Image 1 (cartoon, rainbow, N blue to C red):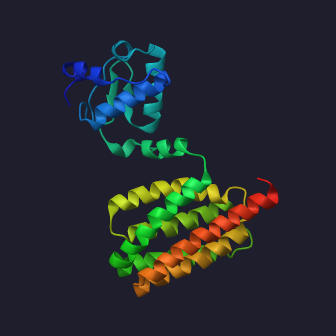
Image 2 (tube, rainbow, N blue to C red):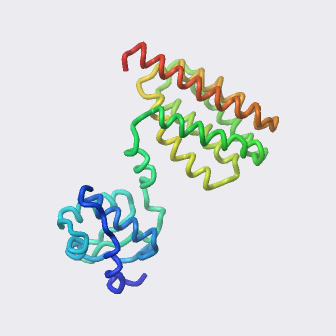
Length: 250
């Protein structure tokens, strides 16, 4: 890729609010340059000094921002050479959108509402587009959960794995990769939270009960039953969590 030397003047379009932490100013600047195609995969970023001057932040803030972006796999810091935008998305270990969703809200009710809204759309597409292979994946994930949670002892990590397996299969059944990606973000946010420090045997039992009608609705291509299954599932989880929090003063 070409060096950014000929593109550096375009960084002047970054006008971030002074109220924001300096590291966030730098990260947002890089993000905007990427989204507006001012920089591309493999491009070399301006030096630490140049970014500091153009963005009006300290060199320390630039350095810290680059460490964060490097940890995400978005930039590649090459000692003695400079800092480059990663030349492949395969190295991104922690999705920035997921990070944004995580810090935007800590309210489990908001996660629940987001999940319900998405799943009501997902069930319709799954009923319309699910293949025999998709249905088999759903059945397999259901049986896997039944087997694993039927053991004498299992951890919350086990049920989280089972839930993610089932809902990932549900998202895949839509046949829409964009929806799958968005749904996976929601699952990564919501599912670990609802099982944290909970009576997992009760929750595992309810998960199995709620999954079966979803699979049956897809098999029977019954949209009304599918929507009812999703709403019922969300209602069950809400009651379980609310009762747990009330009884244990969480």
